Length: 65
Image (cartoon, rainbow, N blue to C red):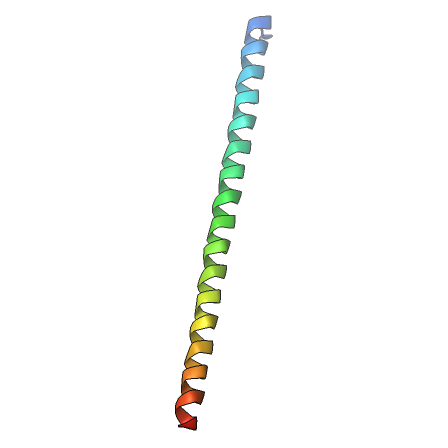
């Protein structure tokens, strides 16, 4: 097997470093997207709870009249 030249080793190292940075950026983007989805889900759950509470209050108020 032929040995790599210094220039080839340098190019391979730069390519590997760029790949690592790209993968780290992709992972960070995925984590941010996951966090955003969780926040939206939590907001929807809170809105649902408020709606159910209002419905219960309205039902209780109407039964007292």
